Image (cartoon, rainbow, N blue to C red):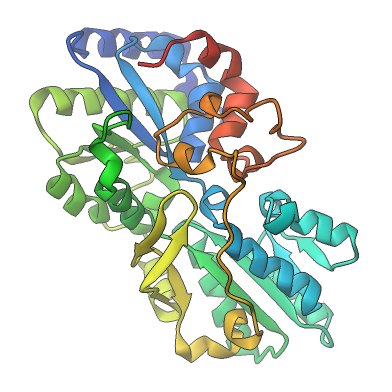
Length: 381
């Protein structure tokens, strides 16, 4: 994508024209609560000051679309066990190493204590490390939504084709549509003090893989419109305009603002590779959402030799979040980051207590970097 092409989606004149269109359409007699599922959208919204251009009755609610944020402490405990007790070379993406685990341990602290934890840019980097260390076991701690799942599938296919014996994957890939259903079906979804959701700004990168079709059943069933949007500010504002138009018309459809990348069927080649390597888990725990059925992927039996959960004896323990941390409520959209008593006091990017402050896609990190002062000045809608 050229710089010029990007600049066109950040053009100030067009942004103000879209803002005027949103103001003219928004019914002052109602409140519009729109959840941006993806943490990338949250950062784009604050980086470019989108809330400043919206009328007060449009509230943007931040969702659970950050894979590091939604990973429960028990899975971090597995990573720590692998790196420390089992002595493997543990490879994973950068944000994860700082997420607090049990007793506020983290992979970064384990590395400081002597564990061999390595940050990689891709799953193939981990396989390369396995090739360079034939006498060590190497585990790739895989996280992410449908966006990062195809690369993990590729590396497992490649490992099997090469006959690699010292490489495995600890799979933590989760899926977007079941998480949205989980949000809408929570008992407290309509309880007093909670935040009902009127519509969704759909994830961009995820939709490039799975297409827009998987969002259609729940848009119809739960009567919540979805507009899939790119990550540039004009993408987000156009999606807000389209959502307001649907809500005013009483429609609940899936629309695609990001048509330059996303189509209805997605990347079918990537989907075939994912289906060959992974199968759905019956249930999986999400931080803040609890256990959700059919919401995550596990490694198929045909690839069991590369499944770290089968290769290593890992303790399965339930670990509670930090008592004072509100990450769970923030991930469900019930609270804003600034509602947490630890925000910017006991919990900062330099000293995170919760995953939402750690990740580059986390809502707390976005508020801290771009919107903290503004959010404190604005009364809740």
